[in-house]
Length: 131
Image 1 (cartoon, one colour):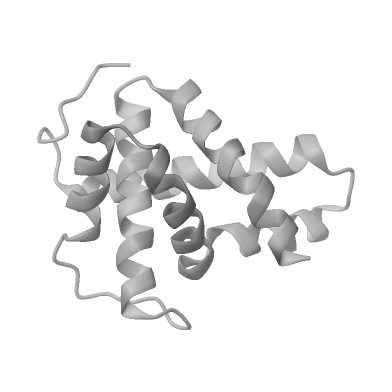
Image 2 (cartoon, helix red, strand yellow; image 1 turned 135 degrees about the horizontal axis):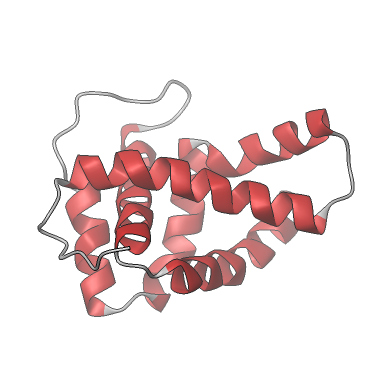
């Protein structure tokens, strides 16, 4: 994979790619941590990939980010997007877009290990709160 500069791609293009990559990380995490049916895995995955859930995870992640990672996150969060997910506030949707842009950046910059470390460090407390 190539190393990308955060300005090589539009924030929304990074978010588009990051959305798929983030969901892959969620699915990998769920499969390795849960011995449950596919329907239950799908139900669990939805609790991590909605805009509201992504916003909560992003808020936990922000203090752990480097300066350059924060810039990528903010560029995604602040990108002009007329869409808005049903059931999510506009603020949560924008924060979720920032998280997705960050994950797109991680993938294109060959920083998958960093992406997974951040996810796991933020997800443990998030799961405890959901219960």
